[in-house]
Length: 387
Image 1: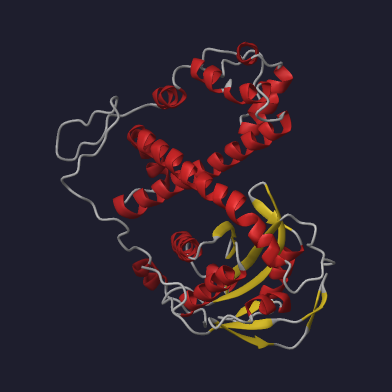
Image 2 (image 1 turned 180 degrees about the vertical axis):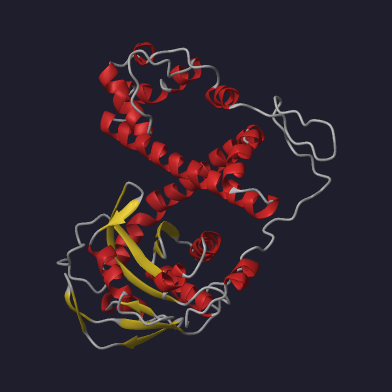
């Protein structure tokens, strides 16, 4: 792509209606948010103090030592728990907690006392909750603010203030969706853990002699990267709104394809996504679908894709190991619109008619020496179909 994308073209293409609305369906509204009369009236104004009490379940009336004592922890242990949740430091004199805090903070120490979790595991699990919900809240707030700016003619500052009035009616439905999604994700995680983990390890032994750098690692995964071509030069010519929409379009498209293909989007790093799948064939199908999607996208540039089948270590919601590093190195060798794999991955796919494999010239890659990249192209069959 020559990078001459017009911003107005991007604006038009990035604003499709995502949901239809049933005008007759009742809209749930929190009990303490009452619309005023009049055709343009909105929810009752709420101040930040009222909103805090609604979210925290009451006013802050307890100090940190009172909560630590009520939970049955030393102040030192309580502070470890609070830091894992992402809470700031409080002094002995701060009225920082509510009675609801006291009840909820009993949950994790109880798991440790009953022997369900070790203290280290409990802190790690709690840190996952704190970090993921922090990122989730920031994401949701920014999405709501952006929507208000785009569709209601507000400035960014006006939207952030107005959002305070709308949050009360969003608390219950967003909380319900959070719990629902967590249960679905945990169910999928159990399937990966209990049903397919050993099969993946056995499959990952094919074409290997056990001396590979990743051999000691516990999980077999197809690891892929996809990044946009010419993103840096393209982003320099965009305003804040258009750049944000472009990045969101890229991540949304990637997320859809990866999910439909049975993979998982691990993280987004600017113009690049990292994803995994449980089999080499699933990883290959996802990789080809990503390259095809952006080759035909009217707005986004093409992307480069690289995928490696090997073993990884999964920690802190991320993945680590030589397999990840090799995939990251391979993507730098790929041409726009191309999918590259290594020779071990190519061997795992070689008897599958859905894929065409074309060896490329060997390349010296930092940290790996000489590698043998293989271009992956679609063979027979429709590949991933997005409905």
